[in-house]
Amino acid sequence: MSGHSKWSTIKRKKGALDAKRSKMFSKILKEITVAVREGGSDPESNPRLRLAISNGKGVNMPKENIQRAISKASDKDAASLHEVTYEGYASHGIAVFIECTTDNLQRTVANIRAIFNKYNGSLGTNGSLSFLFDRKGIFVVPKGKLDQDEFEMEIIDAGAEDISFEDDYFTITTAMEDFGSMQKKLELLGIEAESASLQRISNDPKTIDVESALKVMRMIELFEDDDDVQNVFHNLEMTDELLAAM
Image (cartoon, rainbow, N blue to C red):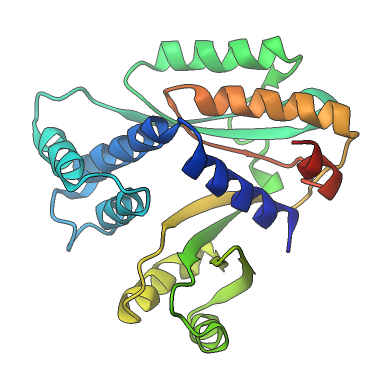
């Protein structure tokens, strides 16, 4: 099981256990808003909205919250949201890629820069680090009553590049261009993923000592706690020693 997959598993457990469910809801509500503005309020004809709704269900978001967000996003007078990315380096040359959705670009960039500065990092120019990451589709599917061998054969045919299984969950990785076909395959099989997203997976992971890595992870968590931040990606190798220390 890759370090990335193990870290995904840990984050899933943390999300289920800690008090950050409201933060998860906030991210999904923003995604619903952007999806409606981009492609309309009908999930049948708006794949991005359909995905956001599915992710909301995956974290047990109440249906009324989802419907309220769709209605609010359809209101022409609602505040506009901007999608923006930031790239930079943490200490020890660890690359960090941050995706944000915000109604105030000045506030967001000021917060991002402040966190980089606090941990001796540096905010870079957009595009400077994109070569270090590959866009991949990541699906997390509860095993339930699925037959593991049969299920794996089905999704390999749909373009799965990697499949890992731990704690009764499958983590499926696809190429970005196969993301849509995997969504359709799971729908065809009547399987609802707990989460599905396009992520930036490091193609050049970097290993540093555990003490330094823990400091980098504290910075990552500070980014993730910011209300404007949707996702944070990095190329720090999640070694067994680091995962144990966390």
